[in-house]
Image 1 (tube, rainbow, N blue to C red):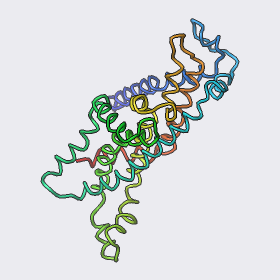
Image 2 (cartoon, rainbow, N blue to C red):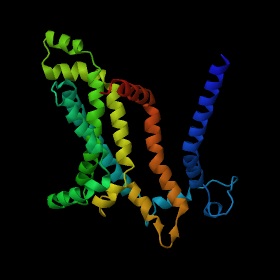
Image 3 (cartoon, one colour):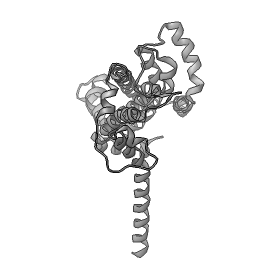
Image 4 (tube, one colour):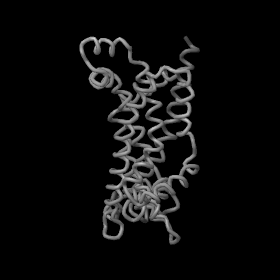
Length: 276
């Protein structure tokens, strides 16, 4: 009993350490975004200050309007996530039900494309997108994000579909459903945790991307991470606006994760158990 209590205490302390390590930078950024500029630039941390929204107001001012960047982030990340989840569900279903000796090799090849460093695919994609006229466009960014999210979505969804009992689909087929109807009305709803998990993770990957955005976007398609980069110049760093913009970028993803945390935990657990 004493050993069990000690282990539980150790796990609790480690969890607390990880929690502080993870949340402390975010908390510092959020608090700093409400500090007046003199309080941010002091050598010693200032804990008592009068909160201000000046940095958020500056972000929508005439010279630093981030609303076009936010619109581009929403469009590119949202479209790529929707496509990745839809195509990933179809691909994952096919991969889970494809019985062939080369199945494992195909599955590994799919996920290996996600393991490749972004720097290795940027140049081929840039040449391809330039030929197709997709540079500086939301469509180009969407396809760039999709190229990295789709293999991950197929791999993750195949694990969820493999966990669905074949008897469910067989019963639907006996009741008169076509294969597509059995998939759409019976099989797909049972993998809702997987769809939510895949969607949230793909959205986070796309929303936070900087490498693809810096390579393929232009004046008309730059995203929020690119706007943050513009605040770091040779003349100095605008810490007030940078922390405010960082808060705008980070908080939506945190709230999205909290809103679907039940599905997210269930989905990740299922995927870990059933992955082949």
